[in-house]
Image (cartoon, rainbow, N blue to C red; front, side):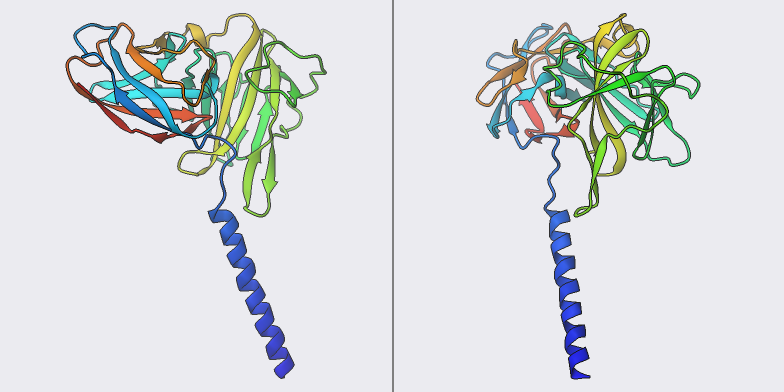
Length: 306
């Protein structure tokens, strides 16, 4: 009887220790997307006026060693009047505010970040790549439900490994063997933390008219809720896509990021300017929201401009 009590005690202790270790793994989990860089904002050197080309403020990293690619970065300013998307390329997206797909044009003016609501297990969320918008089940490029992602009937895909998204500028050689018959093998499941992790790979998709590069980055949104899939998309070739010519989705950027480089590097100071819109006249307070790879960055949340 004493022996059985000792064995039971050991089992209980082992269970508690195992549970504690699992809790530690979950609690200490750090996503592979996003960045640990933090930034600070400083009021511009000159006073703002009723001009529409004033310098608003400058930004610099105050910690972190990552170089942030503008293709993976979005920057939004906001005040009581509305939101202002800032880019290096001069074009930005207009918030749609409805549906299961949130589409944003990134700071490079060429790459889109899509946040797809795939929470329903009964119905799919359908995406048309050319328009970068949600569409009907009768005509789609990709469909999403939970971890299940399928290509449309007329879409072919090729998986590319060991290359960075921004470095991929041409259609690589290979067989377009991904089709609508099987779901995409785009993630791994970490049994230790019970989390879905996107594979580090790029899909090349052809819809018959254009070719795109697509990277599935994350299965969780900024609130760490699952089944919200972050997708990066840029065109590689073919006919001009509808998204960049849709005035209800794309507009001229009201603010410009003054950087001629493709990356925002540690130690590099960048400035934000008005671009044909009088965002701040005299003094104002602007809220700053910067996302990298779909994950919000830590840093100055508001800047007072005088």
